[in-house]
Length: 327
Ligand SMILES: [Zn+2]
Image (tube, rainbow, N blue to C red; front, side, top):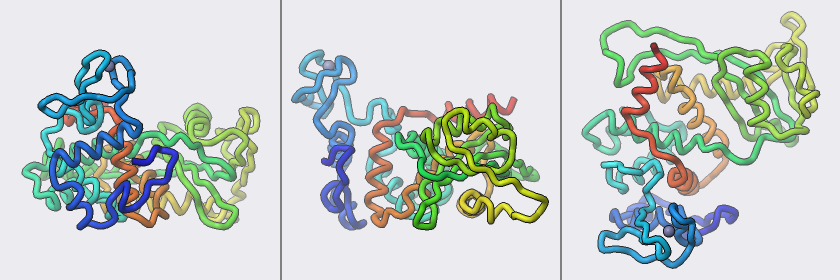
C-alpha cells in the first residue's frame, strides 16, 4: 500500500473496474484487510501506547498490541465504528457515490444498495460527507477570487420533517474562494456558510483557506479592507453601477456558485437543512477539487482513506444537533 506521499496506482492500490472491485472485496475480511493497510500503511500504530510493532491477532481477528495488549480494529474510531452495516455495503456505497459525477441522494443510495431503511442510507451519506470534509492541508494559493453569494434551500424531504405541508425556501449566505490559474481556468475551491458578509466572519475563512502572500481578488466591500494588513496582496474591483456584472469581475466565484446551486437543486432537490449545509458543501468541494481525476477508482481510494481517519458520528447525534439548532 502506498504511503500518503506516493501516488496510488490503479489496479494495485485501488480497483480499476467494477469487476475488479467485486473480486477484491468479496468478503468482510477482505474489506477489513484493505482498511488496515489504508489506515496503517507502515503497520499498526497502537491507539493506546502509540507503539508501532509487529502485531498479533486474536481468534476474532482483532489486532493486539504486543506492548500493552490493547485490542483494536481498523474500523475503531473511524466513521465505520460500531456500524451494523456490512463493510461490503459501505464499500459499495463509496464506489457508487464516487463513480457518479454529481453524487447521489439518500433515496437514490437506498435504492441502489437495496437497503431496508431510508435512515441507514441517510446516515451513511452523512458519515461519508464528514470524511469528505476532512480539511485538506494545502491552502489555496497563487491568485484567488473571494466573494459571498446566496444559496436557496428548501426544507422538504428530510426524515425529521412530516410530509404533507408546504415547503419553505431559505436563503443562506456562503463565501466562496476559487483559485484562478494562469493557464486559464479554475483550480481548487473552498466554501463556507457564514452568518454575515462582514470582516468578522470573512477573515477567519480567508485565513483558514488561503495561504499568506496570495493575491486575493475581491469586490469593494469594506469587509476585505484589511487583507493587505494581515499578509495578503489585495486586488479589488469596485462595481461602478452596473458597468461590471459579477460574472465578469468574479468569473470563478460566479461559475462555482451556479454549479453549487444547480447541484443542490438537482441531486438533492434543494432539500437541505441550513444546519446540515456544511456537510453538503464539504461533499461539493471534495468533488469539485477532484473533478479532473480521471480514475473513479482513485476517488474511491481517497474517500476511503479519509474515512478511516474520521471520527464516527451517529444518526441520533446528527438529528439531535439539527433539532437543537432549530430551537
Ligand atoms: Zn499498545
